[in-house]
Image (cartoon, rainbow, N blue to C red; front, side, top):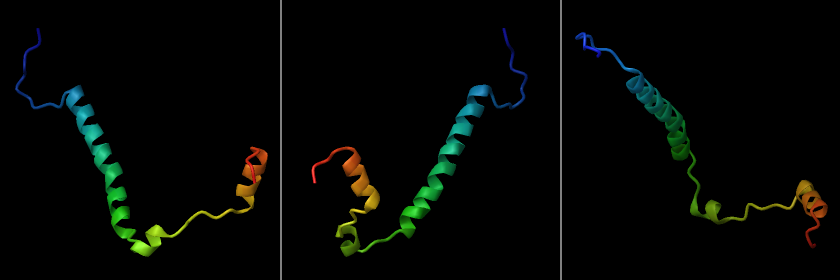
Length: 67
């Protein structure tokens, strides 16, 4: 039977929980800042972004997509 010694210690589970929460916060903060900085107008959001370049045509040709 284990007795509490009166010390405040961080157990293994609490340590791993704190480590995981810290990693989640650290990973999410750059994403939040990046989303704020990227502000497109409505016209830019609706414009067509697809461009059929040489490598796209080669992909279609290799995979036998109809022209």
